Image (cartoon, rainbow, N blue to C red; front, side):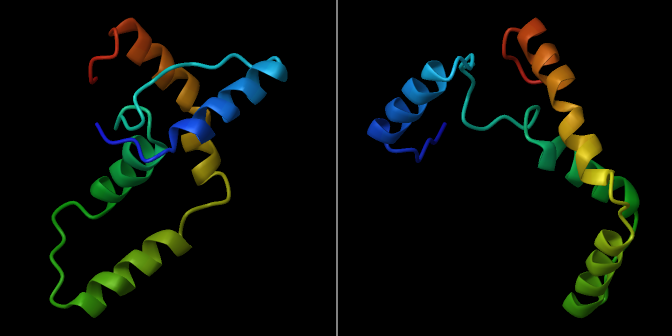
Length: 98
């Protein structure tokens, strides 16, 4: 894995979170099962664009603009709200990909 956080910054951040009484959960810096962009946004895009072929870059950009313009206000919130259950699934699988 790759973690670009500077070690001293990470330690200071974890210490501050503990001071505030927050529980610090250890997890890999990147997991597709815990990234809302992967399990919510990209999945939605894949389903929405299934079977489409674009004749040009401009056609692709226009279709992407249309996709984002048609997302309702709760779209991103729903993705974030799925995160606790995703955490639970990863914990139950001992960190293995789902």
